[in-house]
Image (tube, rainbow, N blue to C red; front, side):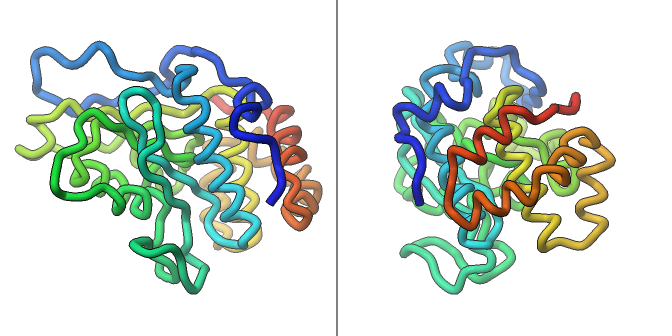
Amino acid sequence: MTGPSLGTLGSALGHRRTRRRRVLVMSALPSPRTDRLMPADDALAEAWDTALRLAWEGLTAQTTPVGAVVVDDAGTVIAAGRGRRYEASGPAGQLAGTHIAHAEVNALAQLPAARHWERTYLLTTLEPCAMCHGAAIQSTVAGIYFAGRDPYAGTASLRFDNPQTRRRDFLIDGPLPDTRGALAEIMHIAFLMRRASPHTVGAQAAAMPQLTDYTRQIRDQLYDAISTADYQRAIALASAAPRDDP
């Protein structure tokens, strides 16, 4: 796979500090932390680069294009994984060849149970499904940040209300409003157009009509970039994409 280095990719994708677009705090705690890293903070630029490169790797492997990393409170990547649903095998300790071989699960599974992980965050290129949302809570990470929306299976608005979640200040935040968010969504929609049922694509079109229509228009160019592993071209296509309001 070719593409820019992690050190230069952040500028290519146009990372910058931005306001939060959607936040769901699940907590009954009186004093939530105020020193959190926010999704668009510069300290997370390389971590997002890693997650997006993993998603691209999945797309070129013809499997679910989602990448995920776990970062500490300085933004350093301490675990990583990607979707491997349609692959026969994966690295040790990661799932493959099953419908639950999601990127988030594969990243979180690398966190040992010998300690808790309350000062770490799960970064994923796509809004998490119910399984991955629940896995993040069980893993003890502080929260989930996502780059792109998933109107079909995403659960950012879902509130878990039980004693376990009420005692924690768990945060879900996203999407990223820049090229990185567009790239995550375009990769996902293009994959669905090739592999998924029409109703799945229809959910994307209903919630994100501009981006879905744009993906239809440029999908041949994107498929060509996939066949040649041309990540730079995919970034360029994403940089021109319209975004739909959440």
